Amino acid sequence: MGRAVIRPARSGDSTAVTAVVEAAYGAYVARIGKPPGPMLDNYGKLIDDGAISVFEETDGAVAGIVVLLPKADHLLLDNIAVAPARQGRGIGRALIAFAESEARRHGYREIRLYTHEKMTENIALYKRLGFVETGRGHQAGYDRVFMAKWLERP
Image (cartoon, rainbow, N blue to C red; front, side):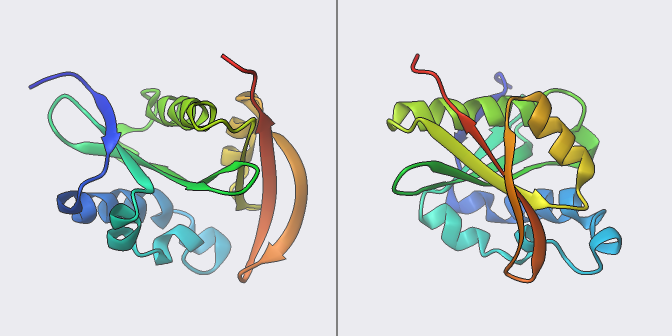
């Protein structure tokens, strides 16, 4: 066993990545009335595209994932999920810090994300981490809250 690391997802991680997403977002199905958008994504393709990084704990388990999509003027934090059994240990914060570091590394000054308006605890967390709400709207069949964080140069 080694130490916990955030690393690029590999093709063999697809099942674990999907399991983390299903477990993390499953609790929201009843609240929203349908599966949240991340439960519908093709994680095999996202892994092949190099868009996913995983938080691998010392026991080798994939405890969390982050999906980052480069855009013309910002990095989109498209998805972040932590296995419910591993929540409350700072994994989500570590993944967000990783996303911010990747944004800076690639020359972005802004990172954006969106979440469902009924995921109020996520909105509160993002605000605590320095994200500001930039708008609300209906997109892809979901009522979303759009947020952004402007990054300082290192």
